[in-house]
Length: 425
Picture (cartoon, rainbow, N blue to C red):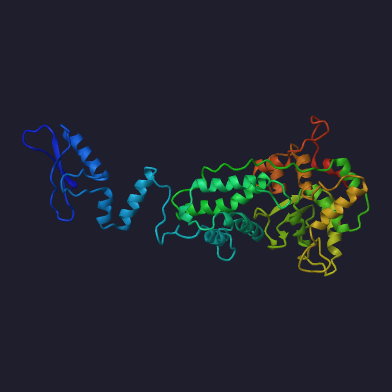
């Protein structure tokens, strides 16, 4: 029923409106709308109802505010009003007491990246998705260093897309501890520490909208890693190395593209007749864990000398060699492999001995080396099966280096690529 009555009075041409007094149930004195059509009169009445009824003598002024103030509102009424205000663009967000989004955003972020408390991590582990403590620890660090100081009091449900944009703008101007601008890759990692929890909250219906959807990420251009030339690699491995483990680790990385953590996680039982079984990886936080992609793979090694060297290194384990002992063992501890920093330290030492500036070379560069010189020799899918890259785009990133030799010469097989670089017989 309408809160007013519209009618003609006698033979007068204009329609009148009488508003109902909700306190008494009686209609107030009629007022002329100055409209000759009933539809126009009703529209005018609604305007007065929302904005206030013109006074006439002791006529009591009513408005939408008065109506709301006097009405018994339910939770459903409140939700309808808020949704209508959002639809009209009069408000951006609203938080109801006791709702899932009525929590401090900073508390939500800290719980989200807490390994023991996070429902997100429990969900990942239950579904057997790949997630590791070292990654979670890095995200929690980003949250505490960048997100928590920026959003100290806001509730989860109060945030808007503009709030996320403000943080992105802030990251564009701050500098690192070395007084250098943050790299775009670093800024994207920092943003992910908050946007991943926000997108998850939206999927779980904890918030009404995905406020990260319109966010434009920073340019994802990766700094190209410097890799050795084949001639440089051959010269490096022709030298005598002080630690045979480091030499064999570098050679194995060159001919297989294995990650440093995968080499650390290599155990004696993983050495096959003509291949390596990549079942684990190692990092100081998670210790021995599944591979980065949570999937094992078989990596071909068509060089008996490399496999024999791996078996030889494993046999020297001072803690005793067994199927489960590490190939690249640590001298002091039986339950951990040698540190990967020793791999690159030994490589740089040999590069310096050749008069080569070594500081820009990393151990991960061997992975780029392998992918660069193997790309286009075998199908991408086959190459992926060796490197463990999940996508072709990631594979392309690793093989982006240009060869200096004639690009049109016939591609050689894996054996032809690496045999001349190996010092072993």
